[in-house]
Image (cartoon, rainbow, N blue to C red; front, side):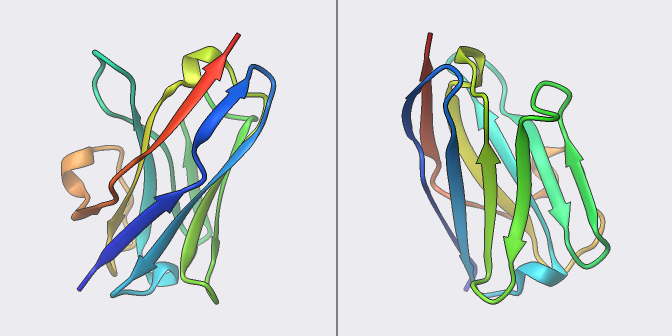
Length: 125
């Protein structure tokens, strides 16, 4: 049974940092495409970053490039999103998602089979 549990959200001031974690069970993260999405109030859920560590593939949305880093710890079967220099426009609910045992990552949320419950990130100016 696939399970994703996010943690690490919180409230910070602009310029601060947070690290989100997504603990996975029921599959191996190193053989799967995993992504972070976010949804702000009144907006569509959008892709932030994805990773397929088996092929060394990563992607970042232009809005977070250079500030966010996606990574995986295969021993812990966990994915992370290090977020630096946070801005008020980063405020959203952040979700992790997975395409188990598939190497092709996409930006389309309907392509992802399983989702975590979300963790709130709030950035104040």
